[in-house]
Image (cartoon, rainbow, N blue to C red; front, top):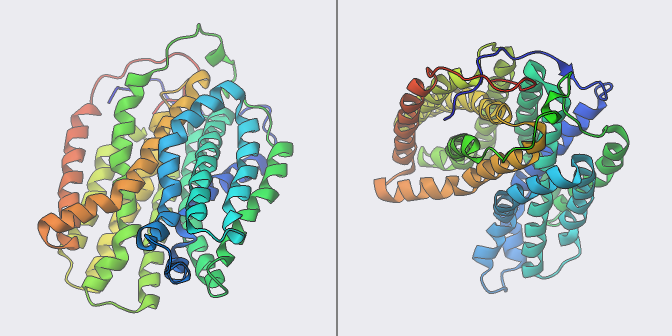
Length: 410
């Protein structure tokens, strides 16, 4: 990975155009919208399967209702980044939020499973624009450690909302499999508030130096390493949320209440990791090896756990690490981007992260098949994560190079 600047990050705070906390609240809320699609429908998939049992290929199509938005987001986020840079952040964010509601609520009236899957793919396109625009605008509005804190808060809000949405999805699912789709109407509440309260984006630095330099090519090489690392980081991040229920089942835990409680504990650990990130003062680049090592230790404990308490300990250790990992990767990526490049760079990073989310269960499924068990696959992932930590360690000791004035450093 390329080395960032040696200059200390300046705590400039928000852009002068940003007044009050409402813009930040709206950006945090917008960042939670893609999480809604990832977890909201999980509790109702069996009921949806029953509703479309006569449709050919329903066994494959119904799970796609849950996963296809993440694939669309991963594939289209880079294009959303290009649109963000060319057409403007706020305009795209407001438009995408309205489309999110339109496409998200479509299954309330659609009777064709194929049409529902198509509407879910369109939701993913809207999510790509929302996630890219929200993260880009955070980078526009804030600099230095204030930016880092808001990016960590974005991670914390997304992690916390996953648990809330899962519970809401289960509660609404008791009414019927279509009922959870009503929650997508929240976009109609957010869009007018965003249009009114979010100021136009500009460079967040006090001098506007980011726009004073001559145009230059997009720093693709500088972003390639962090995006590749982010794909792997997303696999690490999603392993516990995706696989915990199966690991518990392998230990003989069948109670849905216990499974829900353990998943909630792991989610809280992720939030605590994000909170800890805001308290750290060293650069994210320097802490990455230690964060990956913490995640690896959690995986290794989980992979060798022969009891429920030990599995929970491993999950908590891992999730504290992932709570630190995601904002570390995101702030490192943002530190490499100027205002003119921020939309495209954020789009690439978002694409990498959601690509990792999509391939996470496939990676573990392949490991399970090769090693004969999910716990062994998680243990192997722990060894690979420890290896990544070891590879990153000498890279963090490279002599940093100075970036142009106006950049946040990592």
